Image 1 (cartoon, rainbow, N blue to C red):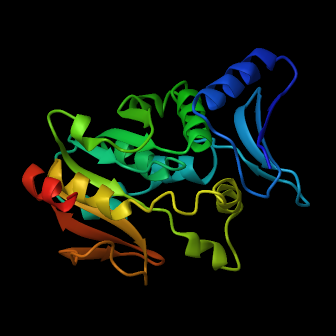
Image 2 (tube, one colour):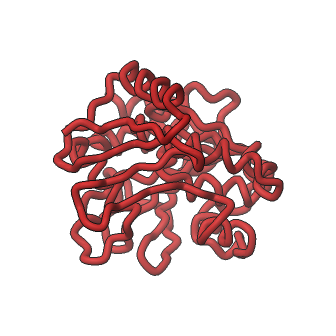
Length: 260
């Protein structure tokens, strides 16, 4: 079933531009859910209308739980930050799978300069819209300025000089089997129902990242999931439901060999 782009009153031109951008990317939703991408006063939101009540996903970083986490959490206590180790606060890091942007913002709030990629055209636009709105918020503007968001598959080979480290969070369809999946993840799973193999190249992505960063790559995994790829991680930082597996950088020669 196709995804519908809809305009709130006064936003017809914005909806037309969004529709053309998705068409230019060759995007067509092939899942069974009836989804709407709506643009309006509060930015973009993704809506699933074939369930009752309707599910809505609207990223709003200055407000809600994410804004509190950025403003008040001790970043050093976050598992992801601990996994990065003793990198300079203004170091350059990569996020190979930005998703809804929560880890990207956490890294930037810690002080890192972040280059992030998101490969799904709709998720990319939801995140880009949310970051643009957050950039107008006085407290978050300095954080957003440290983020460069790019559309498509991560290309660490294009980053020069190489970043110090990277994080990669492959898609995990098994999360959908949990009884209490958060509403935003329910919507993302419905959106990606036709792209179950989108991260079939996850092992190659890990190898490429390891070959093009200076120090380490962190892979985010469900707590009890197997490690990604043939190599065992050097170490892991465990949380309540996820863990961060640490892999050392290998250098370009090893990454090229792994792709053969």
